[in-house]
Amino acid sequence: RAWLAHVGAGRPEGPICLVTAHSGDGGAIHCPSASSARTADSALVLYEGEVRLLPIHSAQAAPCAFELDLALEWSPSVWSAAPAIVQIPNIKLLQALSLSAQMAGALRAVFERTLVWANEREQFGRPIGKFQAIQHQLAVLAEEAFAAQIAVQIACLPAATSLGASGHNASGPEADTHSRLAVDGMRIAIAKARTSEAALQGAQIAHAIHGAIGFTREFDLQLFTRRLHAWRQAAGSESAWHKIVGESLLAPPGKPLSLDFIRAATDPLAP
Image 1 (cartoon, rainbow, N blue to C red):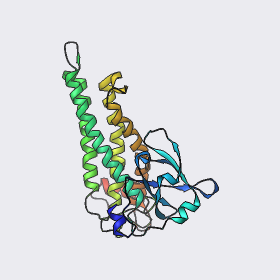
Image 2: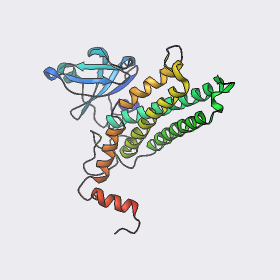
Image 3: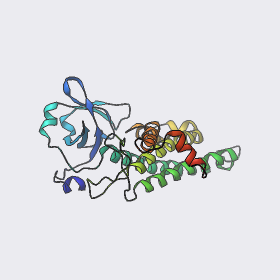
Image 4: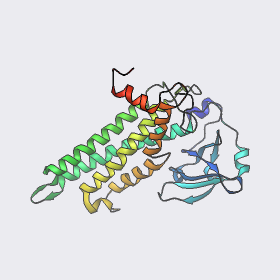
């Protein structure tokens, strides 16, 4: 909202979701899954290299697998009527950073709840948290939650590099100067990949420790883990961002081939 006001695009009321769209039937602007769109009033939409602010109520909406998300489709006339926004940071990177921060926070909540459960739930006359196997799982869960938190904190540091509008960088990382707050594309890409990895493993461990009760609606663990799975897939899972990071590091011209990169990274004496 502050960025929109800064570039003269107004200050819309209510929540705003970030959307990457593509062409649908009849030239419609289509997004198959807009993260948290059900709770938003407006959508900042990236479509064919342009960014415009569109109201959610003007779109045809359909439910998705995750209840807070919606499939959205705007008519070409709605898109044409909205002014293009210039000097806005990379929407896909902003979405990835936002989702990474949400996953890091959810993982922390999952770990805290799982730790409390392990210390309260008793089997064979003692809390299950006293068993070495459970302690090992809790340690891994703590590591994943902390790794996600650190990855997001690093991604929020002042920018040094950024990736292109599609997440790819054709000419190497360069600072995004289109906003007072530049975003570091490489750090964000790594953060989204790392938090997505942590979300998958963290949810698996938490449910393994909780057992069947963790899947019930009466128990709030599922409120976090279902969202972890949704946010992991939104804006690209870890495999998609791994590909983006790899291509950015090894993109020609002037970049080393994969074999040369591995040699330089693993052998300090390599020419």
